[in-house]
Image (spheres, rainbow, N blue to C red):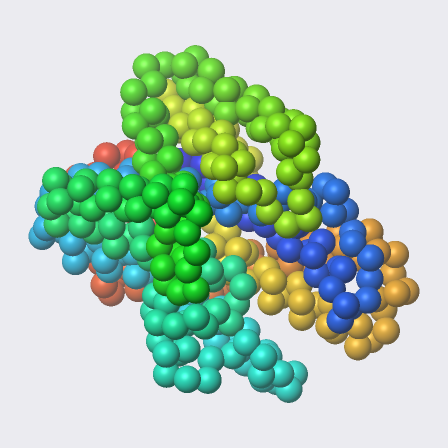
Length: 365
C-alpha cells in the first residue's frame, strides 16, 4: 500500500481505539468517569476513513481485473484472505475469553447466529460477538458489488449505480426497516466506498506533487469547517454525527487520501516508521482493541486498582498496552498467517503489476 495511506490507516485505528476506550471508562461495570471524552468524541470518524480508504485500495489493487471474469476467482481468494481468517481468529479468542469469565451474553446460539457471524452476511438480526465487526458486513457488500464489475464492466456499473440510488431514495424518504441486512444495505456509510473510488480517480489525474498538496490541504482545511458547522447547528453529540455530517467528513477524507496518494505518486512519502508499523497492524488493532482493553480493565478491577491509579494515566496506560499487544499479535500471528495463506492459495500473476499495484498487494492481497 502507499506509505502515506498506511499512516492514515494507523491514525484511523488509533482514533477508533481512543473513542471506544473513553466510552468503556464510563460504563457502569467499571464505575469510572468519562476520560478525555471531549478530545476523543469524534474518534468514530476513523471508521469513515477506513471505508473511503477501502474504496480507494480496492480500485487501486483490482482496476486491471475489471471486465475480466476469469480473474474473479483470484479476486475472491484475495478478499477472503484479507478479511476472514484474522476476523475468525479474533472472534474465537473473544468468545473463548467470554466463556472463560462465565459470560454468555452476545454469543451465537442458533444456526443463523453462527452463519451470520462466520459469513459476515446478515442471516438474521444477530450482532457479531466482537463490536467492530459490524463494519465488515458493509465491506462484504462492497466486495460483492465490485465483483460484478470484474464479471462484466457495464453490468457492474449499472448495479453499483442502482445501489447508490436505492441508498439515496431510502434515506431521503426517511424509510425505516427492522431487517439488519436491509439496514446494512441501505446505510449512507456505504457511499464512503464510492468516495474512495473517486479519490483514486483524483489521484491518477493529479499532474504534479503541488496539485496533490493543494488537494490534501483542501481536505485538511474542510475538517474544522465541518466541525464548526456541527457546533453552529448544535449537532455535536455524545456518540456519532448525523449521516449528512458524516458524509461531509468523508468527503474531506476523500480529498486527503487523493492528495496524499498523489504526492507520493510524484515522489514524496508522508509517513513515519512507527505509523507504518501500526498501519500494517491496523486490522488486528481495529478488530481486537475492544476485547483487549476490556480484558485489561476487568483484570485491573479484579485487582482493586481501578480507583487507585489516577484515571488519566490509567487511560493512557491501557491505550498504549492495547496498541502494543495488537501490534505484537500482528507480527506473531496475522502477518505469518496471511503470508502462508497467500503462498498456498494465490496464483502468480501472468502480467507484471505496476509499482503501485505491488505496494497495494503487500498489505491487501
